[in-house]
Length: 425
RNA sequence: GGAGAGAUGGCUGAGUGGCCGAAAGCGAUCGCCUGCUAAGCGAUUGUACGCCCCUUAAAGGUGUACCGCGGGUUCAAAUCCCGCUCUCUCCGCCA
Image (cartoon, rainbow, N blue to C red; front, side):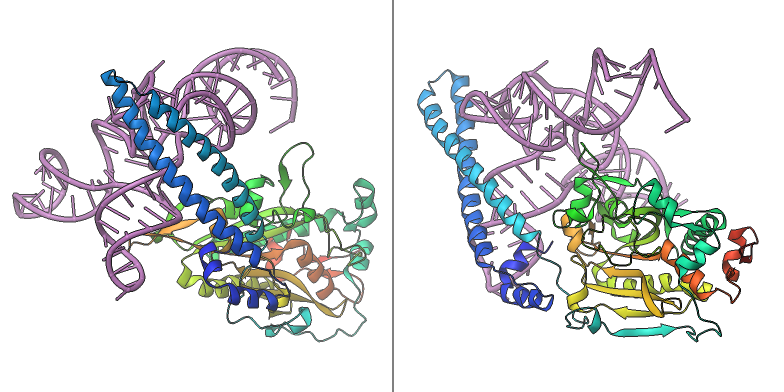
């Protein structure tokens, strides 16, 4: 969420920025609620001060044996008034929160102003996308033929958008997870975390999934718990409420988790194959950084994610999301898109974002600046490093052979027990 | 699932209605002392939000809130009452 002081002082600017994101904001209600809140706060605090002072007096009088019944009666009225004001204040706070919580982050100055995905500029491309001599097939055909992906049984076990991995398919998924974790921990300086896959409402609210995006989440029946849609939620919440030491920043965590998404409103989209599942695996990178370093850290984080594709020799490109295509909490986002020859297109395989202090404010994650001794909000960043299922897709499609087999990239073979090719026999 | 105990500042831990934002100790920071280190001595040592002062900020002054969370009683709540959460111990069950 944005700083309420900043909102007060920069309304026109925020309205303009929201318009770039394709959102219209009406700040009149915000303004009136905000000034009412401050009125109430001042009055109630003044009354409390009076009550505290007089109550002290009552104690002294009683100790001396003097009569205090008159001021006690008077303070009774004051307390009633405080109670009344408190109720209105609480209601005002809630209304105000409801507004502020639904205002998205302000895009960074370097973010291109655009309407949708068509306006996202390409930052760089890597690898050779030359077509093979045969007609490349989509991964769902390859996977089913090799009997490593079973969509029918996934649907039988659960329903649409659930898949069973068999044999070397399961092995490939696991190999990728281990390869990514090893790369990021041993070469990129991240500390591995294995968090709970179910979190409470406070955690979901701190990272911005709630209250606005409840329909995207799976909620446990009868409990106020949710399946995580990404490791970002538990891993960012590790430091919820903390005041960190400046010297320990930037903090870098990497975590493997499954991710659960309701995918409401996406019916009919990507119905075939592994691209859009209700459950998928992901290795996530999360950083906590000082404000002045966060954009450097975003570049590094994105490169760390790209490195996975480079090691496997999968062609990709990096795009910078425009204002109209960015997520709610993000100030700047790079998407990494892997080349999928079977579908003759680039598909998102990672999304790397700097949230600046937007999440940190809601989650109250601060650090103490040594120079001033003051606390400041940290900047939080995260990115997929990478989405594992989609990486399987990229491998199947990029390394398929004319005979239907799939060659395993060199970097992955140690994790596959030396297997260098998956074939139907 | 049943029975009991508990939750206080960076940590340990006192505090059963007013003098408690909170004793004491530890730790930390600064200063003194010291050839160095240790010891010793002194001071400081939570967060947030208002207001005053001020060109702004800082510093300073002042007010309010916060003793797991939420509600209640009272002129007044860390302290009394109710609900919840979490932790620990014992019993049962379970991978």
